[in-house]
Image (cartoon, rainbow, N blue to C red; front, side, top):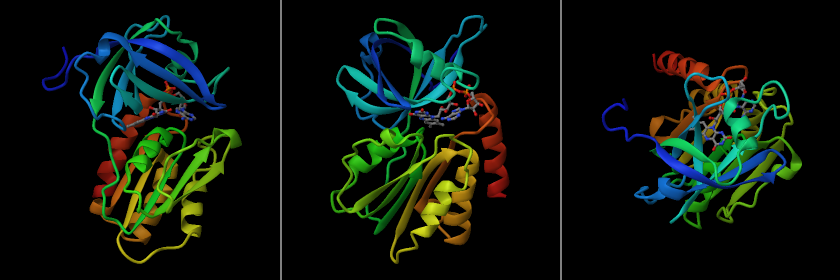
Length: 255
Ligand SMILES: Cc1cc2nc3c(=O)[nH]c(=O)nc-3n(C[C@H](O)[C@H](O)[C@H](O)COP(=O)(O)OP(=O)(O)OC[C@H]3O[C@@H](n4cnc5c(N)ncnc54)[C@H](O)[C@@H]3O)c2cc1C
C-alpha cells in the first residue's frame, strides 16, 4: 500500500517518444494520468515504474517534468549505454516505448527552482539535470545574471534554452558521462568569483557533485540558503544503490 500522503501512481498514456538530440530522448505523457494532475509542476520529478521482462516487481526511476501543458507532460531521458551493457531499465524503456502504451508514474515531487534576488547564479549539471536547468533558467527574471555550465555527451546535445540574456551558457562535451568527475567543478572554478549574493544550483553525477560541493561549499562558503546541490546518479550504481550511497553521504557531510 502507498504510504499516507503519497498518492498512488497514475496511469499515463505515452503520446509520443522521439529523439530530441543525439543523447536525449523525449517521452510525452498524457491520457487519464492528466486528470486532476496538479498545475505548475514543471521542474518537479516523477517516479516511473518500469517493468522489464522477467522482473518480478516494477523498477522505480526518477525523471523531471521538462514541460507541462494542460493535457501533457514532456520528460527527457538522457541516453546512456544505449545499445549495450550499461543502459538501465528506464533508458531501455524510453528507447523502446511507442505511442499508445501505458505506464504507471508516481509523483509529482517538488521542483528545486532558483530563488529570486541573487546577484549572480552559478548553475551546473550534466544531461540528467538539463531538464531541470532548462525549467529553472526559463523561470528566472529577465534581468538575472550568472552562468550555467552544462556537461553534454555530444556537441549536438546543446539545446535552445530561453535563459535571461545575462546568464551565459557554457556547454562542455564529454562523450563518456561519469568518466571525468572533475570537469564541471574545474570549469566553474576557472570562471572566478563575483562579489554580492551568489546562489549555486548543482545536480549531476555523484563524484562530480562532490567536486562541486568541495568548491562551492567548502572553498567559497555557500551555506544551505545559497546552495542547492544534489547527485542525480552515480557511475557504476543503479538508482537503488545510488539512493543508499546518497543517504550515507548526506549524513557524513552534515556531521
Ligand atoms: C530528482 C531527480 C531528477 C532526475 N531527472 C532526470 C531527467 O529528467 N532525465 C534524466 O535522464 N535523468 C534524470 N535523473 C537521473 C536518473 O534518475 C538516473 O540517471 C537513473 O539512474 C537512470 O535510470 P536507468 O534505469 O537508466 O539506469 P540505472 O538502472 O539506474 O543504472 C544502470 C547503470 O547506468 C548508469 N547510469 C545511470 N544514469 C546514467 C547517466 N545519465 N549517464 C551514464 N550512466 C548512467 C548507472 O551508473 C548504472 O551503472 C534524475 C534523478 C533525480 C534524483
